[in-house]
Image (cartoon, rainbow, N blue to C red; front, side):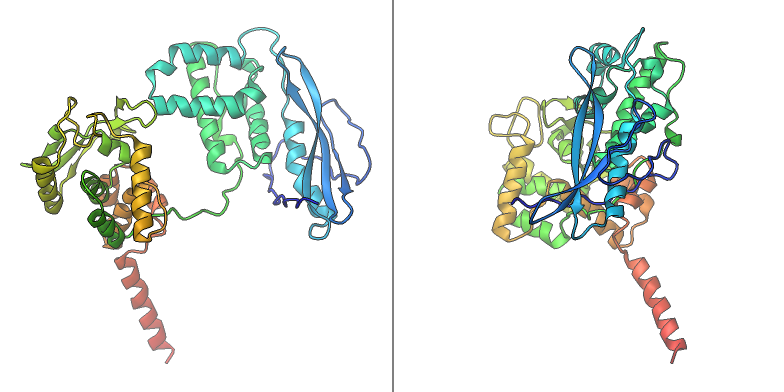
Length: 411
C-alpha cells in the first residue's frame, strides 16, 4: 500500500470570521445554511489506517455556474494522530469553504472583466517581471476563487475568506502577502478609475503565521576567492564584480563600459537585464539606482579585463556572450554550478554572491546603515531582517565581555 503523507496541523487565527463547530465523527452533518458545513471524518485503510476529512467546496464552471464538488483530505495516520488532532487539522479547510462565498455578479464589472482591462491598459507600462508575477498570482489563486465576483463585492471580509482558503492549501505567509499585493494593486487601479469607492483594509487581515525560516545559502569570502581563481574569463571577473559589489546578477549583466568611472572609483548601477525577455529595464526600485564604490583591487582587475579579455559588442556591454549579446542568466548559473562541483562546494544560486557581500560586511563590523546603502535596500529594516543571522565582531565582543564579567562574579 502506498505511504500516506502526514498533513501538518495548521493554526487558524483566533479572530477568524467563522469557526465551525467540532465534527461528529462518522456522521453526516446537516447544514443550517447553504454554504455552512461541518464536514465529517472517517478512518480508512486496513493495514495502515488514516483519518480522512470529507467536505464539499464550490467551484465556478466555464459557463459561470457554481458546482459543489466533494473533496477529501488525508489528515494523518490513526496511529500517530488523535481524533481531536484530526478535527483541528480539518478545521482550516472547513473555515475556507464556509468563509469563501462566490457571489455571481448580477450587474457591473467582475474582477475577471477588470483584469482583462488591466492587462490591456496597465500591464504594458510595468516591468515584465512584475507582470509575470501578477499573472501567476491571478491564474493560480485569485481568478479561480474571486474572478466571478463583482468588483464592489470585494471587501475586507471576502478578502479574509480568500486568505483563509489560501492558508488551508498550505501557502506560506510570504506567498499570501505577495498575492495580496497583486490584488490590492488591481483594486487601487479600479478605485482610481472610479469603478469602486474603496479598497479593502489590508491592515485588518489575519495572515498565516510564519513558519520556520530556511537560512539562505551563501558563500564565504574564501569560497568566492576559490571560485574566482578557478574560473576563466569573462566569468572570473564576473564573479569578482558580483562578490565585491553585492550587485544583483541582472544589474551586472546590464553594466556597460561607460558605467565604470575609474577616476572617481565608482560603478554606476542604472539598469538591469530581465532574465526572461533579455531586455534592459530600470533597476528593481528607485533606491537600486546608485553609484557604488569600486575597490582598488577590483579596479585593477577590471582594467586588465578591458585591456585583454573584453569582447567588443554593439551595446558596449561589460559582459556579453560570444555573439556580442547580453549573457543568458541560466547559462551563467550553469557555469557556476559546474565550477562549484569541481571545487567541492555546495550548490548555490548567483544570489549567494550578494548574500556573501552583505554578510561579510556585517561580520567585519560595518554599520547596518552602511550595508543598507551598499545593498541599496529601501529600508534598513530589510537589511536587518535579511541578515539578522550574521553575528558581527561587535556583537561577539559584547557577548564575550558579558560572559567574562558573569563568570568572574561566580568564582
